[in-house]
Length: 98
Image (cartoon, rainbow, N blue to C red; front, top):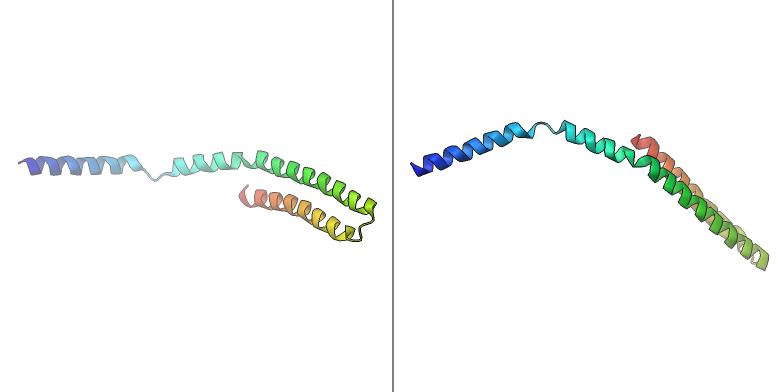
């Protein structure tokens, strides 16, 4: 008799939890809205990091140029490339997900 009661209670709990699950569409929609809400501040943050990187690179290139270092063009190209990469990466990620 005890086994029947325990089995009935377990079956009732399993069926009740199945009805409570749903398909999760509301949770997925809410998660998508939360994540897309972070793209605007995140993109602005990456642009700000790119601007600071550009300023630092400009100062370093100017110092190399002023000291007469022959390696100035290579340094300028690497800093410029890093800034362009940051801006393009942020723009492409934003266009993919929004």
